[in-house]
Amino acid sequence: MTTLAEWKKGYASEMAAAIISHVFKSPGLYEMVSFTLPTNVASRRVMEKCGFAYEQDFKHAGLDHLLYRITRTRWAQRGGQL
Ligand SMILES: CC(C)(COP(=O)(O)OP(=O)(O)OC[C@H]1O[C@@H](n2cnc3c(N)ncnc32)[C@H](O)[C@@H]1OP(=O)(O)O)[C@@H](O)C(=O)NCCC(=O)NCCS
Image (cartoon, rainbow, N blue to C red; front, top):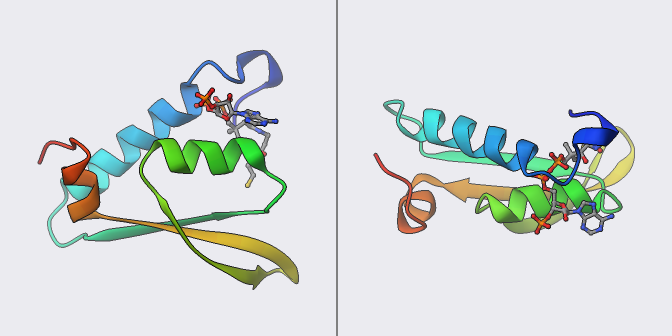
């Protein structure tokens, strides 16, 4: 999480991309999921910019959430370097 003054400068996307890269360069790790509330537009945008694809709605902590997933193959197709 970043602070308000730092929002919309690409920091969350840059951090997420670095984490995704680290995960997929690790042996034996082939997919990642992320989720957020439907109303959290910024989080959804970060996930989409990083290549996560919407998969399904689901309940978490009694609330509607959106589940996203990215595979190692999709990440590599989008330019991720192994
Ligand atoms: C979610 C959060 C981490 C994103 O951080 P960030 O550093 O601003 O993210 P980025 O700058 O990498 O990208 C944000 C994207 O969302 C977009 N965005 C932000 N608010 C938006 C809104 N209200 N409507 C539409 N798009 C929005 C930005 O324009 C940007 O997309 P773009 O690059 O295509 O313009 C930050 O907003 C935050 O900490 N929010 C409060 C806590 C929170 O919601 N945490 C997540 C709980 S699930």
